[in-house]
Length: 398
Image (cartoon, rainbow, N blue to C red; front, top):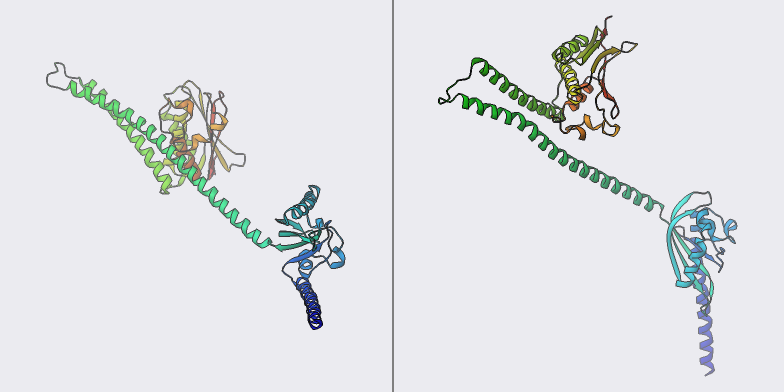
């Protein structure tokens, strides 16, 4: 029996020595770990131990941090909100708490940390302190943010393209409706005129049309055909603009004379006033500039039929820019609608009763920009509209 007790005492002594050796090795292991900040805290959150990983990650030496409260690693806002204390309360209640967030190093630099705080008990289950393990996940956080940012950019791009597609479909439907109406009007008129003409030319009709009546009939029919040709030409022009096949044949032209020539075609309208500075030479496509001037004049006459329309051409004091303007005193255009009229099929709501597919000003803008120029609009509701085309001057002769 005595021998048995001696063996038990020997085993107990060995177990205690092995346990102390294991504890020493564990403390040595924790102390030398460099990839994790591992340290102990008392029941109030004061730091009791400090390993190499904690020193490397947070920048504090042992003598700088031991005895301080672990809240030093949190932002001022989190300290004011009591976040460190709340984590200790949760660790006491649940045995452990895990959190991720920004933490502060000694030099004030932030890093993204994964933190695990574990409750430590004695043999009787009483709280004796806490262990805290911290990992630096800053690089993972940066990659995650990059991925999230890329996803957001992709999502925004998809939404933008989807919105563009939806807008394009709406524009297409509006165009088909407008084009159908605009094309149908001259076709219907021409069909009616042809039916009347055919009826008058039947053998059973007693009175045949006179030469004058036939001339009038064919003249009016030709006008309807020309309207159709104009609509089709406008559609082809827009198609060329969109496909990049729009070309300009530029040469030196007298802009003053060109404006005067176009003005003469509209001279039957007694409300037109012309004021031109002579001798303005620009390097431009004569045919396209004729389109610009004609479109602006016809646009003013169409939308402000009772208004006096002023056409002017001036040059800048340094003779480097020419300014061609068409001004009316019609109903004007609301500020938030002024960009719309330069878009394809752009028609103002108040002008939907007026013919046209909303292509004229779109083409004007594209042609002007193709000449290194710009077109601006000055207008307000009820105060008329002034379109101003600015072009570079090649020569100016007083």
